[in-house]
Length: 280
Image (cartoon, rainbow, N blue to C red; front, top):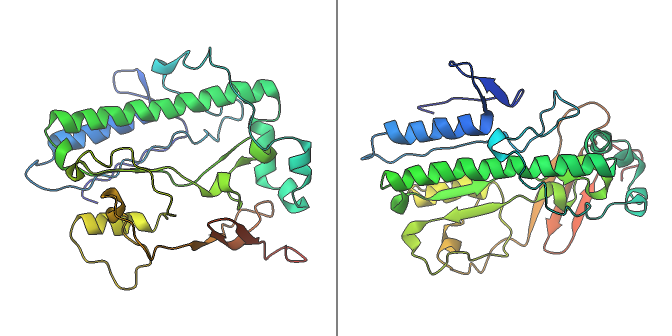
């Protein structure tokens, strides 16, 4: 990186030189806008803007999802639906090692009562809206600097999350809530015909760097497994696209975060928790 400015989420609110406090999402947008303003506009750039939100603030087990104060009151008068796939019958169908996993332990922190769920899900949505506002500032700055028509924007996330679904919290396991992430690609050079176009093909995080290389006109290394998503932005149907992919979670985190490996295709997920006895 020519410029690298990491920001932690613990805590989300940071004291500024003038004594005020700002949310990390706002500070992240500040840094991105500052980069755009100071970069030589005659030169190409690659800017990665990584928000900590809406990840929980792990040091606070009560107010898990601190939002920017500008969003106070947002969603207060909105009816919040209960989490999907929740309840005793869904939870009881899980294997015992998932029932006692970190997914379950953090459920007690965040979602285990209707009151706690209602408070935290509204806070979570406010954090997401904080990202929306911050990204809006970055996009507005691209417009102001006359860069928007020649800048490709890719929006995604690092993992999915259980928001009380299956009576779980966190991520880590093999279900869709954990595996799936948003992915939006905006290439203004393609025109407006494909704006809002959705694609059913399965994309992976491996595909994002391959897509960036393709956009930049750089040949992808032969050993690289990802594939460019660039054709999809033009509405091109790729005939030999993947129909399944490998999944795994191998992080070392004590005994209550079971490791697995598996395969997801267009209909099913096969997951093998290989450290269980017997293997599950």
